[in-house]
Length: 252
Image (cartoon, rainbow, N blue to C red; front, side, top):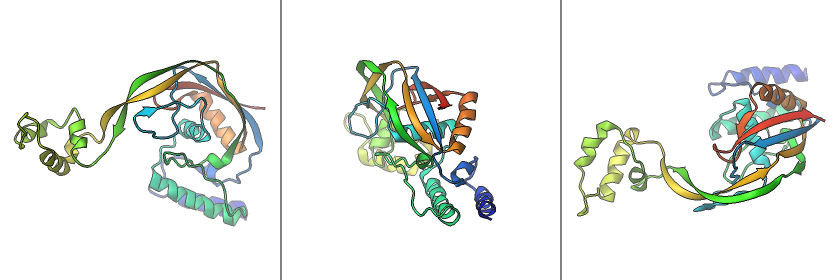
């Protein structure tokens, strides 16, 4: 009866509008019954930042558990917004409590607000960290959204339809549009502006000699699906979208 009830909840849940992918492993009994080795081979310099520190983004020496959760979710093709994540976690809690008598489980949330759906399905037992042979700083473009004049002034491109209208706005003596005018113009024409503007930030990168290796205890359901997905495509990224990596996962 327990399995039938879980499957019934899952199939009802799967019909919800925001469900576009298979999350069935989240509705299995969460037992970390597999010992595995995860190997992460850097293909480029990495910048692993766990917080938003301001103008300088200093890299960590190794990935956090939240980083590993992000890698796994990307490999699985899970691209789910915050509101839907909360709905899914609420449903997981309901299933765990009724079907498996589990009233609480650890929810992994990073310092920047990323909440993983599968962090409770594995645990880091032992990390092996390769030597860092070089550290250097580079300029990185951060994408930002902000109401007010900063957003429209920070976007280099707008819809061609807005260009003649923008030229008619009140200007300062130096020829630039006033802050009040551009703020109002952006508010009334947001669809013609990019969703984000960019601002340069100083960011640290690290060059590694060798690969990261992590001994993990993991749910067999999660291991099986990761093994299949990584065999199909083992390329992911770590830290930011410039930090390409190769992945390998195997059972001990």
